[in-house]
Length: 398
Image (cartoon, rainbow, N blue to C red; front, side):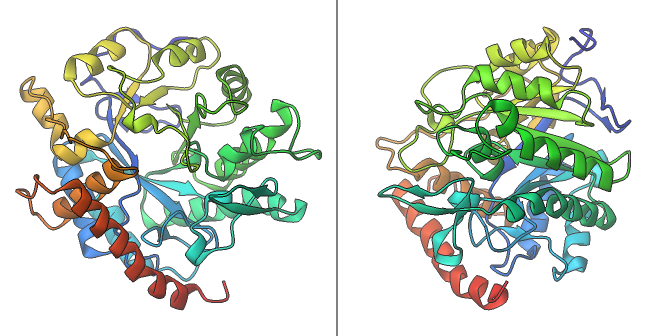
């Protein structure tokens, strides 16, 4: 199925719920790790999303917002539970939505990838590898997930956010259920892809039912987790078909996983947009607007995929870190972001460099662009270590 092919990068897009994106460039989710260590927004985090709104973004997605503090990705995650600082969240929603921008929360649950110093990881099945271990969730714990996501989404709507994105990619909980490499269950939530997608479908349905009709419900889905024996494009296309008619307003296609030793999509050497071939195949199966995230470094690339009708929206993350006013830059001229190059790239180095660069933007420190990558890793890890005590104090007994 195809949407209107008479599109260009700077034309508006009306989503199925009636919300209008003012153009086709979305700041895709990154774990900015700028919360206060107790799950609440900081002034710096609020300023970062305000800067992206001022820069002309159509929508920004805040990465890894937890509804359940027991399974965080990092101690810098936001936690929107019933004890959150609602005033700070309202400020974040307001400042991140100026100049016609929309601000969405990416609802996460790290599952087996939950940060061990502050959690007890649990996923679909028992996992016991040298780098990590995880317990299996009980059936009652699984059945509680859709309602948990739905209540978090409803809080977001009441606080002034324009939407949520349900995170079913990159090896986090819903992605773990989709992958036969990590889901070995023999009940209704394991086995065939139709059973492995059950939790995602139930979660989408619960969220859609809970929130207002004009509140955006997006889904982030892996095209593949890029692991032998894992989630394949064939299965991913069945999930795309399974989501049709469930009230999804935007389907964000990504790939890869953060499990230890897995290849990182964000550090791949290939040129051009990622997952474009998958998006073309998915287009035939769904009427839901499509977005692909990853690999966009040049305006011409973004323009081409929109003009061809391959996707409706381009998702850009690191380009926005290098130029927080990227949409205005691209609309005024064809100047592209200049991506950093490093002589060596230690594991996790690129993520650390860009995460600390977001901290620079949040504090209006524009000129700190020459940070050594090893220094970035040290700062990134030290900041997490400092927050562990804060997280443990705040969420003890959760």
